[in-house]
Amino acid sequence: VNFYHVGTQPAHHLKCMSKEIFFPPGVKPDISYWLFKTMTGLTGLILYCIMVIIFIFSLPSIRKKAYKFFWLSHQLYVFLYFLCLVHGLARITQAPKFWMFFIFPAIVFMFDKVISLRRSYMELDILDTELLPSDVTKIKFYRPPNYKFLSGQYVRVSCTAVKPEEFHSLTITSAPHEDYLSIHVKAVGSWTWKLRNYFDPDYKPETNPETEEPEDMPKIRIQGPFGGGNQDWYKFEVAVMIGAGIGVTPYASILNDLVFGTSTNRYSGVACKKVYFIWICPSHRHFEWFIDVLREVERKDVTNVLEMHIFITQFFHKFDLRTTMLYICENHFQRLSKRSLFTGLKASNHFGRPDMSAFLRFVQKKHSYVSKVGVFSCGPRAVTRANSNACETVNKNRKLPYFVNHFENFG
Image (tube, rainbow, N blue to C red; front, side):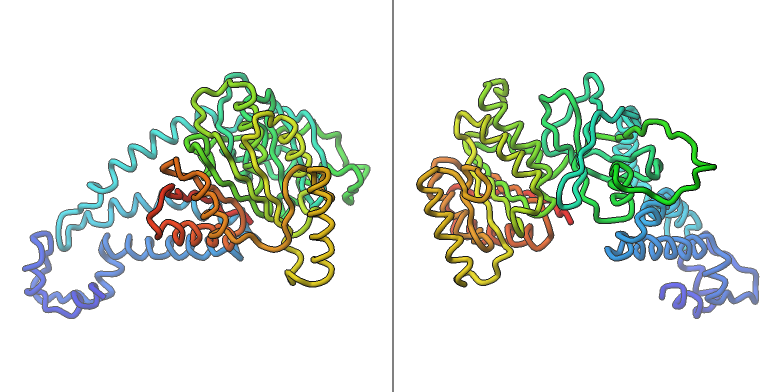
């Protein structure tokens, strides 16, 4: 629009815009001159094309099916910022000012890159793999000496046996006090399915025996750790944690870390005195591996710092006959044995989705002596959005404690 306006003006009018603009007598530049024969026009067109490419490959549907191209297209950010720096050098209207806003973030970015490169692409030996239900693969691998991380953080991972140049962000599921690292990978895309099939002894890909060569033992490459939305749980005296779907993976590390620290008194900096953990899943058959994690956490929780609730969402009708009978049996068995009929856990089982506003009001009433309660949620966008809305609703009452919301979208 600006170039069209400039391109329709007489040449002698343009001299008022900038001292840098000079045209011989009788020359009237049109819009094609400004677009294709000036540095500002050419760089502007290239910048527009780069932004369109990045935007297209950022669309969720394309990102899931062509993650490699999504990653490659975002590497164009180097050209994007370079072209932004030279875009105004022609001084058509004024001296360039982009560098003033760019220099400080660029210094911080370069500093972060230097630190990241010191620990990037560490090749680590795989210690053990396990194929779990619900298409989840557990990979346990070597932990380098002096490798430090916080529970709830994530690493960028690739495997030398499956597209070694392709990295994916995965949450660390082992606790900081353990002498190994582990991740749980749910097979949902091309790379994750190839990873699962590679470690599946029953999977036999079509190969030519004559050209087949013995493979070296695969290794895991990691980069990080990087900060996650759940890593600040230890700063709150009371915390509410909600995991849904594959979003429960950060809590495998966090809950282990919590009960280890409170039962051994090794973490003097941990403020947590009470944690409410809510697990939302379609049925117990989904993420069965996580029930084993919760069972181990309950065994270690000698101080009763943790209270767990499991919500089964596959029952759409809250008061149909089957749901009612299951609820009666579960409730009766829980009163008699203090454990769940379905999972064997002390955690209470509920049928349907949680009413987060009501639950947060319960926490607010029970822990009125604290000023802030941390709410941490991880899972599909619908779940994290519902939790955010519940925090906003309860906080409108202006009663203490105030709920501080943190969330990550998984799946």
